[in-house]
Image (cartoon, rainbow, N blue to C red; front, side):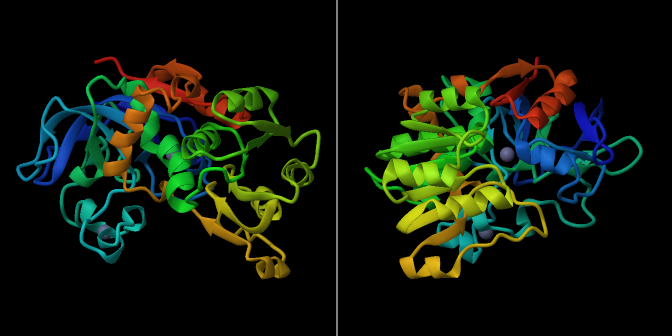
Length: 361
Ligand code: ZN
Ligand code: ZN
């Protein structure tokens, strides 16, 4: 099958033939229908986070089940599914207390000595986050996917696989925003827009979108932002404090930078909570004022929206089909796998919401 392979950090992906295995007892073989090009892929492509090479990146996908292992009961060939990098073992403390997204047990991977799921011509091919979605087919653990309603378009379903689950989940699971509370979101890319949408679904009172690109701020209004701040023109912290008379209940950082994480904490009102969604580069430390803890301000991380994806994703599909979740507007461009390097160039320029790779089968 055809896949986009990364051989070296900071080099273009190469479309080549990669061999894919047969499903083991708890595995599923998928025909990939669509995959979003996510900023986290770019972090690995640019070498900010080390990963063994060669590797097939991609982790925001939807597809159709082709073949299932002997023990798989939750899906069957022909089912439409969304994949998730939060593969869960089902028996560790995190899983058993409902925090599936924190599971790091290796049970969902193949063991040392077993034939790898992917093979290159000259040797091994690494699977990325249990998924490797920039490929015509995916061979994954049954706990890395969930079946969805047939009427859900698969290109839009793909976005639920990462950005939307991350953004909406940060609001409803990690931060637990209550109706009427005020929210600020720093960064209006795919995840930031999904966070704004999540805040609107959760019933937040005022939703303040912050970015430096006017077009993204316009888009933010469509996703439910009640106010927008262009951080290129004004001090975002000052502006939020002014708009909300003292700060927001919840600030979300959706970029992954030291400066914006610190800003998220600084724009809180007394008792407020900052949630950092963006991936801050290894080694980077953030600084906050110790006295702010006397005002019971909190700062926390959110990994993949603290999801319980087998429950969350079908609900997000329902939200889309009932008009509450905006996905059409999130897709800025659809393209074939061959154009994938263009999608990364666009992501680097930071202008577009999201490109989606479409597969013709
Ligand atoms: Zn992602
Ligand atoms: Zn687990």
